[in-house]
Length: 266
Image 1 (cartoon, rainbow, N blue to C red):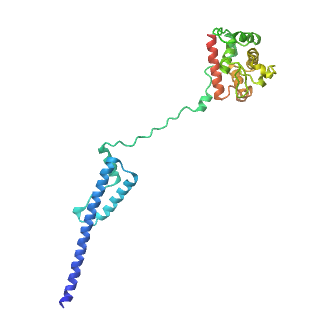
Image 2: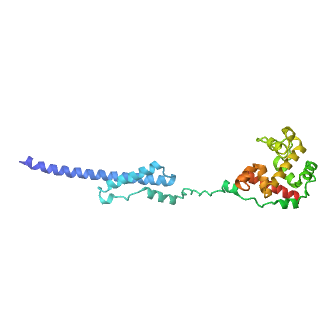
Image 3: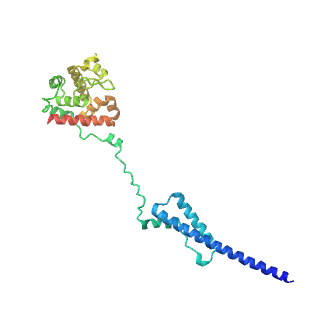
């Protein structure tokens, strides 16, 4: 009889002991988790939080919350998230990540190519300013004067083209086989009557051929800008674009020659 009466008591006592042990284990686990999260937050605040540590800390915090819910009220801790850790950084003087500066769009090369020349030089203007006041000391000036008087092209403009084309180098040759002081190609030389391309290295022959070609271009175009553009890129491109072509090299060429011309007529 007594044994049968003691059996239910032992069962009840065992159940209470098991529940107590579970509660104590949960409390200890919650306390350990809280300490680990606090230590991780402190280390992260001092040295920065790697991506893997931040995710681990948040996972630990979530796990800790699940255990705390079953523990007694006096052992509960506040949930620590990655946001809380980030907020702590500012208290340790850690600067935030630098902002990415917005890239400022630079000037488009196409806009530079399409810029109009600074001013339009008319045929009448160069003929009215045919004097070359700063040409006396320039190389090959007498040859330039001979060509100028023969073809009616201002000596100042001839000097400007020579300066731009070859910098007064009679032996200059380009990748397009343009030769001499005014960079005349064999095809252009034949067009103006010079059939032996080797003669283009002779300064007087080259200046005469280049001046004759300039005379033709000036007579067949409305402005000096178009004539210079045709000298650089060919008359076909000027006709195609109905003016100075939108080529960066050509527009720069026209501007540079006009600036050199302006210096010589002062």
